[in-house]
Amino acid sequence: MKPPYQITDTILKLVVAISERLGEINATHLYKPPTELRKKNRIKTIQSSLEIEGNTLTEEQITALLNDKRVIAPQKDILEVQNAIKVYEQLRDFNPNKLKDLEKAHAILMKGLINDAGKLRTKNVGIVKGSKVEHVAPSGTMTKGLMNDLFDYLKTDTDVLLIKSCVFHYEFEFIHPFLDGNGRMGRLWQTLILMQKYPVFEYLPVESLIKENQEAYYKALSISDKKATSTPFIEFMLNIILQALENLLKTQNRTLTAEDRIELYKDIIGDSDFSRKDYLLNYKDISQATASRDLKWAVEQEVLVKTGDKRLTKYKFNLT
Figure 1 (cartoon, one colour):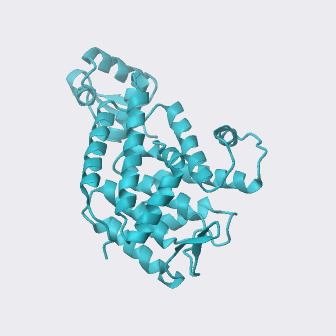
Figure 2 (figure 1 turned 60 degrees about the vertical axis):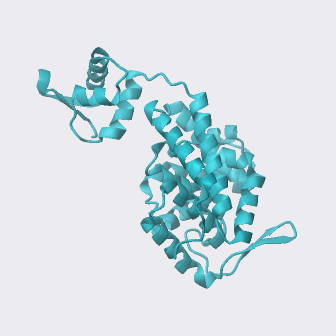
Figure 3 (figure 1 turned 60 degrees about the horizontal axis):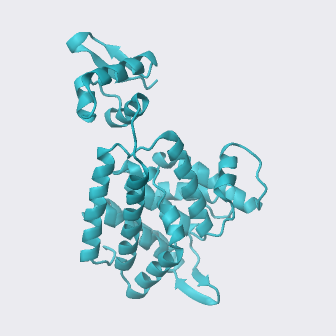
């Protein structure tokens, strides 16, 4: 059964605006930021997602843990960060359309923090904020069936991926399929869903904007609960995504080096043969001489293997 939501004018406008920004990002080759920025954004994402759940570690402390340095902090907080680092390192290995992969990711994320890491709950739970019960999740006996339905929707529904990722995020939080770790898992899985089609989301710190708008995030979830439709939450999340993309475009005036161009092209071409002409079609703003220098540099660095001569010259990435 399709989850209940309506495609409003606001949602349509946001999808169009996001699609335009994604086009600009692709045109300026910002979909894979430089290594240092990727690392920085990953740290920001982990810190923000865990802070929403009450973790006390700063970006500096997370950086120290990444560099195998000692950090003085509550052991639980350190373990949460270490687990999150492991999950994000393996992000590309998970299939967003498989429930088993979601369970595997949860097992890594919550290892040593709860007894049933990676296992769907069978008990009944409610979410309490202060002295008030904020949300009563569906019965534990329904969890498996609801999650199977949600993944069927994700795999088969024809709505645009941007909308489906938001619907999944909301429905995941509504079902509350695990005893703990649902907030960070819902946000992680929306990122994974989006990055299959839009690589920029792997390193886009959407989580930091959610953290900055934490009250509005929970309010959007609550309003959607009360209205029995994820529409308010979809509008909220699309707004956050649009802001994150606009921030990237504002802050990154990227001048590509030969190494940048070669690395980006590797993601596009994979293990296929290509010519200098193919390479130039991807980088229309560089000259033939610059393309030749790029390819020569990559061959010298043993990043590329060159075969043939003159017009018959072909290149292939050395993936061994």
